Amino acid sequence: LKLFAWEPPTLAEVRAKRAVELSALTRGALFGTVSTFLWGAAPIFVTVATFALFAAVSPDPLTAPKAFTSLTLFTLMRFPLNSLPNQITRVIDLSVSFRRLTKFLSAEELAPLPLDAPLEQLPALRPPSAAAAALRL
Image 1 (spheres, helix red, strand yellow):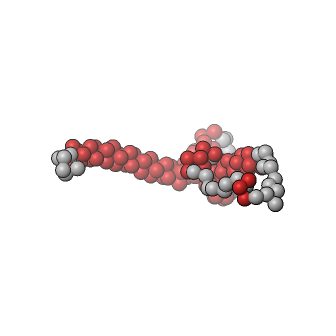
Image 2 (cartoon, rainbow, N blue to C red):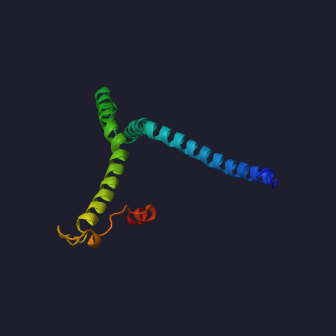
Image 3 (cartoon, rainbow, N blue to C red):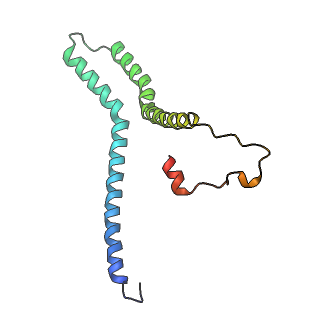
């Protein structure tokens, strides 16, 4: 780079690409922060909205037994709702694994090799190339 004096244009190009990359990283971090906050605050929003809706719609007053029972039920539902995204991810992983295993197990059988065949007749055993392995996924 220095021999042909390409350093300043190359440095400018690298800085421009880095600015784009930093912008994308900043947007990703901001999105992650907002989504984490909203996911953590969702139970509180649901509780407040439920009590407000109950107070607005129901002719019965909101009594302490009703309020504390509702709070207990919301607290009990918090863990299953927080684990829901993980369960969805595991179901997707399971379906991918199941599809791969089904493809492998339903593949055609290879012809059995005779035990007394000369070495020249046996197929060469070599690891597949990275490109061929990527195509099989």
